[in-house]
Structures are given as C-alpha cells and as structure tokens.
Image 1: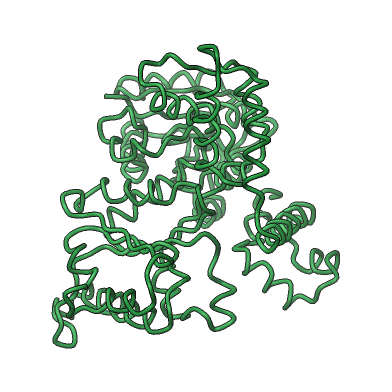
Image 2: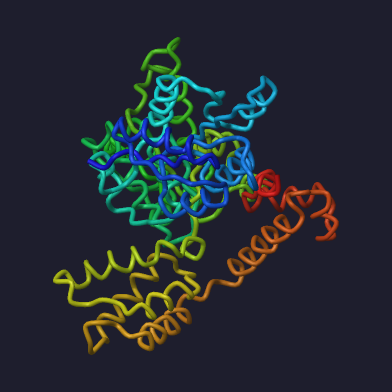
Length: 442
C-alpha cells in the first residue's frame, strides 16, 4: 500500500529535517522544499495529499504559496507554521481556507494530530493505491484531473446528486462510473439515460415514478446518469425536479422516506451536459430550480487541450488496449506531436487517432510523421460547428481578458466595451468566476 505523501516547505534546514524525521517515523512519505518556488515545482511533479509550510520565508512566503496552491488544487489541505504567529494572521489564514495554523515552537504530537486530521479530508486517489481502484478507468496524471477526482469521490461519499459539465469526448461517462464504484452504490446498477436518443414522449414516461418504464426502478439502489440533461423537455424537467426535491426533503431528519405518499427513489442522480446550462436557464429553456438542485455539486471536466500532461498516460493506456501484447509504442517525438495537437474531439478523438495510427504503422514504434498525418486528417473530420467555435473563441477571449486584468470586472468590461451587467452575463454563460483570477495575483 502506498504511503501518504506530504510536502514540507521551510527555508530553515534544521526545521525541515526535524519535521521530516517526525513524519517519516509515522510512515509518511516526505518531500522537502527549501523555498516556495521549489515547493511549486515539487507540488506539480509529486501530487502530495498535504502541504506543510512555514509562513515567513525568503522570496515567496507561506500565504503566497498557499494562494498559488489553492488556485491549482483547492481541495489539498495546507498547514502553516510560523514563529511569528498572531491572532490576526491565524484568522486571515483560516478565512482564506488554510486547514490549520500552528505557532513555533510547536508540539510534535499536536502536529501529528493535525496531519492525521488533514489526511482524513484528503483521501488517496492514486489508482495504484488499494483504495484508489474505483477510478481505474479514469486515466490521468494532471493536477486538474486530481481535483476532478477528489470532487467525484466526495459526491460518492455524500451520496448526493451532481452535475458534470464538460465537452463531448472528455470522459464524463468514465467519471460517472468512478462515482458509482467509489462507495456504497457499487453493488447497485449503473443506468445511463441518453436524453438525445429518446423520443420526447418516451423520455417523459421514463421519468414517471409509478410506471413500468420508470428509469428510477431500473436504477434503484444504484446510480442514474442522465446524459445531456439540457435536452429534457419542460415536462421531463418537471418530473425530474419532483424526484430531486423529494429526495432533498427525505434527507431532512424531520421527514420520513415517504413524501407526498410516494416512496422516494433510492437512486443517486448524476446529470451531465457538454456545455454550461446558464444560458438555457437565463433564456427560460431550463428550470432554474432544477438547475440549482443539480448544481449543488458541480464538477467541470477540462477538455484534453487543457490537460496535455495526461496525453502520455492516455496514449500508453489506449495502446495497451489496442495492442494487448504491448507490441506497438510511440516514439518520444510522436508523443510530443500528440501534446501539440488541438484536440477538438478530446479523449475520444485521441483514441481514434491512435487506433488509426496503430493500424497503419509498419513498425513496432509509431513514427512522428504517421501520427502527424492521422492527427491532421482527424482534425479535418472533427472541426467544430460554427456556433461551438464561436462559443470557444468567446470563452478564450474572456479567460485571457480576466488574466490580463487580474479579475477586475470593471476594467475588463471597459476593455471589452461592454457594460458591467452584460459582462457579468457573459461570464455566467461560460462559467467563469473573476475571483479565481484575482487569487493568482494576490
């Protein structure tokens, strides 16, 4: 079983060594860094479950390091140590989301207790770990996907409904399977309702509670994945809302499992959509109350182009399936070519490219020229529709603008030549939070 990995940061070599000795004695794996700058590099490479950092250091201090870590991995707990502790600093750190704040000289046993508590809220997600097998079909190596997986594990543990947002081909179905496998519902069924594949009348009948066709009966004690939930008709949305509302009431200890005389379905509902639903809600095409019930736990899955660190691992995984005897590999230059490509079709397109390249190669190692040719041909087939391309450009523009202005909405609106109200609507349409851009400049 792999040991919990902890990153310790301090510019005092003696303190760094002392903390390392204490943690290793408890069988933790310790990574040491003597500066905030080194810590960032180690964090991205090693993916620790916990960070312990000194507050006052030369160069980047502990709070600046925390701000950068929170921007990249907000679910990773951080413990800050300082010889200059004060109530205002502790309150400020806690308000910003620091897990714990200890003053030097600290009690060793108290530090170990804090470490134990922090690791309880930062469970292992490594597929090589015995408790990480639930995510074996979600292949990744990036910090962004680590965050997605931690959110997925929390959704499974809390047994609540959720909304997954991500472009077609990014792996939403695999993430639903991981949620299903993670905890108590693994023994129940996993049922997928593809909204776009059903005639309207049949789909609405599926969402009735007292019906032979009820999808809730088929998914009972398990997980129901409602794919492309934005395609539901008004009547279908109303029926889904009634079920989710009754489930929410049934969780209240003041209510029984019988609500309005109907047994509340024992099923976890996970909805997914290829694009944010904000615009559909604003235009009255999707019920706002249903949106808020589903969106209480929202997971945004990044496109493959935003997590190119995952491409080597994904390529190895797909080739092991395409060529089970491990005959076919990729040259280093071919892997680099994969990472430089524009993946409009995401993981699904990557697999298709590898399948084509594997079928065409005359050698055991797929050359760069062949990979580049297949990528080019695949890209021509996967050009997005005009509306999708326009939405993509609009979002990229807003992201760049928020980066440039440090999340200052007034400044960004002036540059874009839009009033603040209209600019906020644009941000909501693309699920962008200006506060997240401010953190990077704090």
